[in-house]
Length: 141
Picture 1 (cartoon, rainbow, N blue to C red):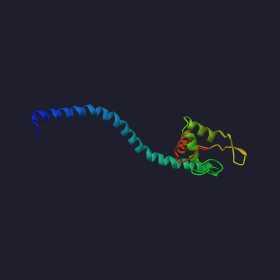
Picture 2: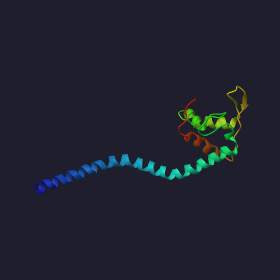
Picture 3: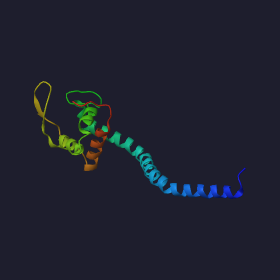
Picture 4: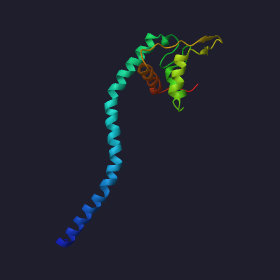
């Protein structure tokens, strides 16, 4: 059996070790807690934003040439995401493409002006682009 004196020393050392570890644990855990809390709050908002983005592409008849998961006359939205996600200016490139009316070339060789998307405000456009970039499973073309 340990004496009271050695038990007291062990107890003091254990408290000191825990006290020394607390700032490290706090530094590591606090950012993770904040991140998880933020994700928990944002998840319902993303679901609603996805619905708004999908409605916007339907309203603007984007689905005539594009689908989420398969190529039509234009690339699948998932493929657009796969192509542009790695680029630092991905958002601005997609915004330009859907708003500028630049010519696009079709597989049969003919060219047409890309239809300009009609939005109520910049937030609606930003939501669409963020939604496109959030799509997974596409391939680069």
